[in-house]
Amino acid sequence: MAQRALPQSKEALLKSYNKRLKDDVKSLLDNFSEIIKLARVEEETQVSRMTQCEEDHFEMLVRASNIVRAGESLMKLVTDLKQYLILNDFPSANEAISQTARSMLAMQQESDRKLMALRDDLAADLYDLEEEYYSSPFK
Amino acid sequence: MANSSMPIERLQALDNVEKEIASCIQSAGQALTELSKDKASMKQVESHTSQFLKTLNHVEGELSKHINYLTQVSTGQPHEGSAYGSVKMYKTARHRLEHTRSRLQDLENLKNRALASTVRPSSAQNNP
Image (cartoon, rainbow over all chains, first blue to last red; front, side):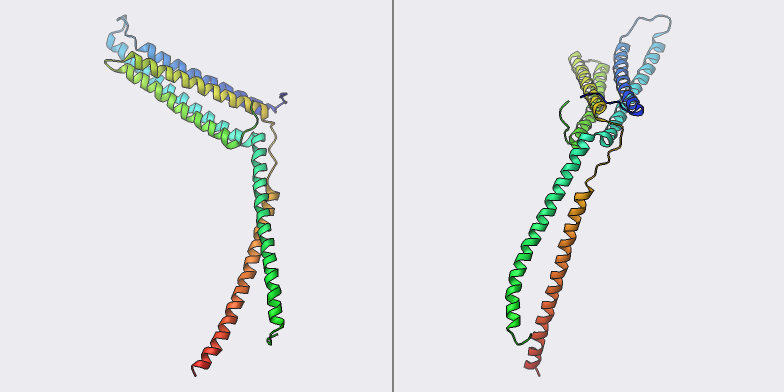
């Protein structure tokens, strides 16, 4: 399909979605791998082991929060995509409208068909009733 | 890209992506929980980690697919189609039906009144 020229705002919006996706996935991967790397116990250097442990613990907390933040940002991206899809997915919107129109038309035709059948039955009964009425002393 | 599927299917696909994101983070948490144990089973850690990576890959692929589809089909114009015409026709058919029902109800009431008036004089004659 030939690429139509999108308005700049829409193009920028879709590019921003792509960027957000890449950034969040990268953040998830990087933070997870860094936490795994921190699990290695290294030899005591300038800082004491206790201090190093505290530092590693704090870093793990921060990286875990980053993982959760990136996950929530991905969820927000999915929500934004859903909203964009509902508003701008023309083929699906056209399909939904056609299907609604078809079902409304089918129900209307069914309703009218039954009404016509009722009319025919009433007309037949009316014929008999009229005959009865006009041949009675009450007319 | 496949032909346009119903909007509900695309939205359901995005719902599944949301669930996968949650399970991806859960796998990451399970991998780290396993690693933090005194006697960590490396097999479990590896399996959770590979599950995390696989799910993340899948999430990225699905979302890229959706974004590419939207890049192709969006025009920037608002959608101005509606099913108003056919809905209006259906509503007028319902009005016709309701009108017929009310006229038949009137006829029913007329018949009942007539029956009641024929029964009352005959019961008055029987009980002077």
